Amino acid sequence: MLNRAIIPASLAALAAAAPAPQGGNPETGYTGAIHITASSAASGQSFATSFAPDSQISAIVPTAGLAPPRVSSVLTGPTSHGPYSGTPTTTGAAKAPTTLAASVGTLPPNPTATYYNSAGVPLNAMPAPYTPAGGLGTNGSLPRYQVNSDFDFESIALGLYQEWIELDLFNNGLATFTEEDFVKAGLTPEDRSLIEFMAHQETGHATLLTNMLGERAPVQCTYNYPYRTVREFVDFNQRLTRWGESGVWGFINHLDSREVGQLLAQSIATEARQQMSFRQMTGLHPYPVWFETGIPQSWSWTYLAPYISSCPANTTRLAWQNFPTLHILNSANVNRFSPNDTALNETTGDRIADPSISTPTLPEDQSCEHLNITGVGCGPSISRNKSEPLSFPGKKVLFEWENPGQGVGPNNSYITATAAGVPKYAAWVSQLNLTYTDLTVTGPNTGFTYQPESFVYEGDPAANGTMFVAITDSNLFLTPFNLSMINPHVRALGLYQAG
Image (cartoon, rainbow, N blue to C red):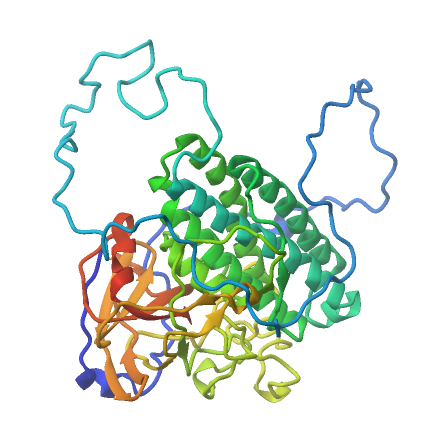
């Protein structure tokens, strides 16, 4: 599905205020079902009040199996963090010996992609019983779990940079903030234990990707984080894990090595769970979309690089592009009970994915953090409904974008760049959709547009959750599988908080 909706500036008057909350459920659902409540289920029964040793069951003492080593141990305590202040010894993305063209050209559909099954039964001879013809890597060949092209290497190396920052980030939050700090943010010692377990998961992910890359796999770096409170820590995590997951969905089905893609999918499924958990800790709906978004590698690297301060000498460099930052000046503050009252630049800094400010910077009487009121509160919860949404279709969105040529990433050694012409559109990327809206330029590197009202399917607004927006010079028709072809047209890139 793809929408190319253009919302003209004349519709601004229709977005003067947020739409009123909708009551009821558009789905009729089942009728006549038996509803069992806790009180009815426990009627005539009593709850357990004492807890004896476990029941005796048959068991043996198992022989310990082999535990393959990890590339990083489980960290405890703070590590070195902060901005980089030195001079880079090298600059720019990794280059090949030769670059064949300025961009990848467009081609017609694959001439061999003609299969259609109108009968609903296998049409071709089966190679073995219960084995329909077709598929890749299904001919009995021994799997080789190694990258198999430059594309594979650079994509998995990018994924490893992401795994390393997650490992450090989760541990850093636990080391920076006390158990009492977490409790004040509505998070218990068990929640801290969950984040600690996420860090353990990242050691496994980093080991997996390192093994698939080989001896030139990137190593862990030093980072510079944008949070000052527990709320800002979990908000930053839900943003970072969003682009981490989406970055993999964007390239996984283009990998030459299907074996690498198999293992990567089994690790990124865990990342999706982490993102959901951090949204719950932030008091947001855990997954307000029907489909998760895939983005190009250069987008993922653009979001990640500003938070890497420095890397050890001779760390493997990446070939991906860093786009200039698009600042969304009135992006909704997730910590306000009235997001429409968000002032300009209510983030902790000016980097591309900095979290919303929280208390005490945000006055308590404007915060939803400690309000236990349905539709208003935003404390940690399995799920939250908001009477006033973070954003809405038709909302005027204010932009400011940076010029290219800025040093970012490890040792400030990567340089932001763009090949785009005059910016004309805002490109909204969420779920399965790429939706364009007209950009009104108001001055040097400033402008505005309106959040589109587009749908994936009936009942599923495309613009929802933590999503991606770019300023472009063209409204090129693209779909999830070839979205990377938008890159030559991207002037700047930002992260948008919808929902």
